[in-house]
Length: 344
Ligand SMILES: NC(=O)c1ccc[n+]([C@@H]2O[C@H](COP(=O)([O-])OP(=O)(O)OC[C@H]3O[C@@H](n4cnc5c(N)ncnc54)[C@H](OP(=O)(O)O)[C@@H]3O)[C@@H](O)[C@H]2O)c1
Image (tube, rainbow, N blue to C red):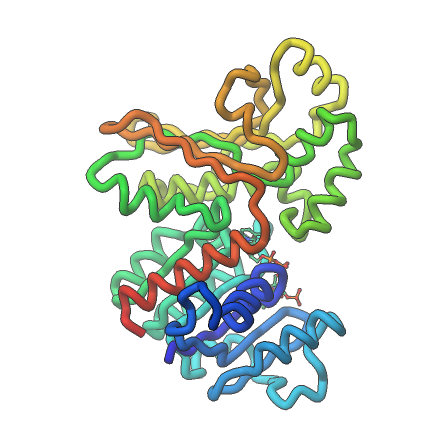
């Protein structure tokens, strides 16, 4: 039995619960996972705790019907989250709280550190801790012989970290580039079709792929966090989103979009990372690229990553129209990897 403590029960947490507890006995090979949620914590919608396992179907029903857990739910708890992380009996922390740029990845970094210190495995979809302090967290996990897995922090469920780590052994990553933010790519694509900025943003928010705070997406912070996470993990860098030269898309006007299209180009928000002597540098900037460029083919909420190494020609990973299910799948993939490697 794998006992899990879940932080965050928003889009991703609820979709993960749906896959695990509604589809688990279907054709997804999850029946043998034998996993329970022993705690589910949110910031403002209540918290549930039961060492024997939470009634997840009931929890999902309540949060979808009332927007919060029922006050009379017998599994409601007033035990603070930090105490639960420190004292509860669990094997794996699933950290799905909101990205916090302003607080430099906190409080998620503290939650993850506490769990790793207790020799608990951690899976997170939150890019903040990876963008701000990957080196320390991964060292702590290694020292305590536990897993710290992060696949869905960048490009949702697409296996970017696993592909590079497993499939590019011995090769040195010398450069990365890509379109990593769905919301801005969606807005730029919609503006090319004559839609307004705000109208396109509203759709991205209602579909759940825009960050809770849209300025993270529009001003390039989400992209900066993702390219920081990628460089820290794949290029062994030690940078944070604050170190990255960054510009968002708010200066891309309908006139600029039209002019670019007329000259055979498209505006895209491009992330780049490269080695400069002993340093790794990174940027997030809107670029006018040729319509023949591979990146110009990335439509709507799609994303892509180009990986350059010293031993292979570049590889490009493209993700087409991801949904919340892709992110939840990335988390599930990490959970299955924990079970496989750690045997719990
Ligand atoms: N959505 C995507 O497509 C996607 C893709 C890749 C990665 N991610 C990442 O995955 C994470 C979850 O995304 P999401 O879309 O599920 O976000 P969300 O819908 O905003 O849900 C976030 C959840 O975290 C809870 N939370 C926030 N701060 C907390 C705190 N300090 N302590 C305890 N709980 C806290 C929230 O509580 P309340 O319910 O009370 O607000 C909510 O339940 C984020 O870090 C996001 O960047 C998301």
